[in-house]
Length: 297
Ligand code: ATP
Image (tube, rainbow, N blue to C red; front, side, top):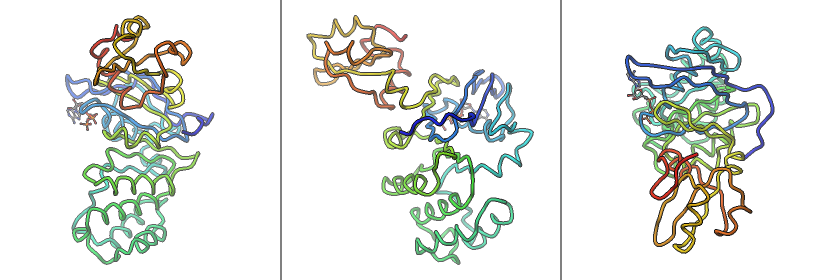
């Protein structure tokens, strides 16, 4: 989406790992996440996404090293949290609380929270500040949650499956508001979601996790350059196979082949190559070759 900003990485991890007893939820990983990006952290259930976020946020002990905005999240968590906003689920707020009380508490505990900003957004959404959270519809809850999140002057916004349980209109409204009112090139958003297709248009960077291992960490521009796919009929299948696809899938008499490191020119004899969607790439890299491929490389 945007060009990668050539500045200090937001996150630098070296041999970062996390085990729960015998279960290695995150295998030793070294990686960087650039500043000023909207980063999708994508993986199947149990892949290790929340574990990674918990390490980044200093919410759990880990092995190896990680620096987030230059800080060790375990040692400097309080300081780091001044610049971080974390939302795990926009549909959850303490049900017994009144909205205005909730805002006052937040204002007391978070140095970068602007109560005026939050109130304005809630009033603009025509939600009475005296209402208790339990009286709100899911859509209103999203508005209140957004008002809170966007009133925090954070450098890093971490969203762990934020729109779980919301309908598509509220999901879009949520991401639109985040983009319009939060994101600029000095800020970074990390978001985990299973709705890859929905979120792909706003991402500029993607990280794939499979069984605790980071299998891809790249900008969407680099992914578009590196991975291409092409649809072929039966007559070109042997040729397509010979060019070393990493994945293939047949549907209604056409087979889609996904390639790593081929070019539009080199694939021209098969047909018009196109970029691979993140969802398709995720399946391709997760599936060890698909039904017809000659193997991953
Ligand atoms: P999902 O998409 O289902 O939320 P995830 O990618 O966020 O999954 P994690 O929650 O990070 O996955 O879990 C990674 C692995 O670590 C899983 O096998 C999970 O069962 C295990 N795990 C996570 N938290 C704990 C814990 N507190 N104790 C033991 N095992 C855990």
